[in-house]
Image (cartoon, rainbow, N blue to C red; front, top):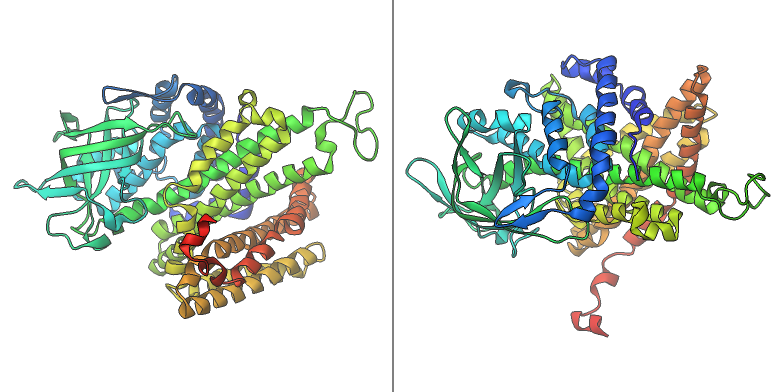
Length: 596
């Protein structure tokens, strides 16, 4: 397996769909097309030539744990040093702490490359960016002065410590304690599990953001605080001070991402400092969590692209049987399997889901940028609402498609996909965790309905539907796009009706929220991708009518949009029917009857 960044498609999404140049001008960061393309070219070289070659061995070798210390797979330390030295770690960091301030719309492309090249390697740096965001937003000036410069540069990494053996999704069960000290610090005691990069040998220091309870905290999630607990306490000049009272107790032996250390972390009266106000830790952590969920969506996308590349290369080379219409390669003993309709079905499903997912990620990244950087306060507020609506869809759907596309890759390879030699089965194993961590996809579906749809009575969903409905109206006036636009418009109308039905059913019976949630999210995602494919088709048609010299590229976009709407979008109907089936068939059977 090798990896090559899909630069042409990324440029299409950035420049032709979302006008990244105008976006950067609005944000005032000084980036132009030439600079952006140059950065992505270099990013592609780093991902393909430095990171991707590590992926297979990281799975074979894994991390090693001895006497509380973790050794990462061979090559990771050197690759991480290049990551820091070449400025990749500081790409999205705040400029006042020597970050480069790149917008998410651009950075997401690089991060997708890293995910596709080696998900294990990316795990060490991914949470640091979220930790920087949380500390920059909620931390005291003193904490930011001492810790942010080296976290932004990548010299120090960050983690997110939420989960405990008895408290996963339900943080109300959290037991870790933080005792106040006379000097304003706290002594943190407790154990956390499933901590990505909790211990590693890539950096000298690791800054843990830990959820804990203060002695007088109210019960439940309202009594949770966020604390910064470093492996080494920073001195006044920002250098390393004394070792803190925390340690790694073990690393997990996992199904996939074996090159990423997943740690049990023990805090034994470790010194920490509050980030944000007491008992407001969950709100502070969600600043980091939203970024983490977006990044996990990119993990699914990166895996999908890598799997598609592998399957396409194999389908072009593997000879098997003859085309149904007669020999396609009469000079060879058999035809390459790409001539067979069912293989085409799998490849086109991979392609349209991957490229559609890239458009969705960019659409969400643009909203995240506008939420934090638009010069108008009302526009920032509007973008924040849109991003909040999109995040659970991005996290859940892109990770689901990552697993599906990897599975299709195994299928294209046939028996060779099932064995380790070709690397496809590793992608399927690595991608599986993305549907679980940072909030399972079922939790994302509940979030979409409970906090987003019910939270504002469907107002933001209505605004999103209106935006894509306008797009469909314009496209419907063009003969080449009319049928596609009508198909999308019909689904948008159904989506609007389903949103109304979900709200009404939830008011009748709270069980309907959980019963409908996953199907509603999946329906939403398939229709949202259809709207984005319509936008891509419109841009491709513009280019063809203008006589573009890349006619084959744009024609492929039109073919892909056609395939998606005819062969993938119909899945939405199944989710609609299931959703309308209600909660009764789920909840009617008594618990004991499951055993029969």
